Length: 348
Image (cartoon, rainbow, N blue to C red; front, top):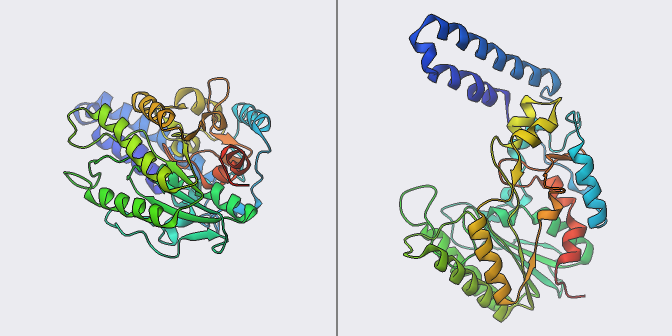
């Protein structure tokens, strides 16, 4: 997050909208004190994390070291919980965290809200490979692209990316986040992707979805959600060699990691304790897990890759785990490639 954004969020807006400030002199004094405190935090950010050339450049994911196994990952997480000071070489850097997105966002393979046609030329790894893996879902699927891309390069797969913003792959109608009414572009896109799966007959389809997608206009939204999972998984399983689902990742329960870390560079543990990340939308998560079990697909519980002993660190091996309130950073996702590869029902 940029300094201007921090200044606006933590100085201008609180001071402008604080009612005691508008009413009386004591309020003016208190407002000035709060403003100065926030200004000090922003100045500290400038001092500790000055803008540097290349601050907004994509992270070189090829140099990210992947955890060998779950035991090593658990140790990394425990070490992360002991982190006090924010690393000076944090990846991605705070100055460039707003732009930390999987490569599919920049090359047009992750679709925005108004797009419905799966684009061509979105095959990564070895496009000529006999092994085809298809990634399918919303931005919570797209966040796994760095790990799958590394696996595709390593294993020689053809990786087809099919992701779209705010569009769960679950076969339900959802509301638009951009306007009133239904997100019709999402429904249309999903039908096209399912048709593509039927034609392509991939060896593996990997689903990813937020659990925060309430069915639009449903009389019984929970039943609709369960039936939507069954329909999506059944259609994919009919034409794919195998189907796997990656469970949703932790969400911020308070302030998002970049903002909290920027204001607490010397006390990272305070962000973990005061604004923790945790599994959320547990009712829909439970419905999702039950539907996946009934469908007989592989469900991969990703929570142990993020949390240990009931806590979820924000910095692990000099990497920011999250780029915002509910998306994984690209370097951290890349660091989970081996764990993901071991969990997937891959053709040998």
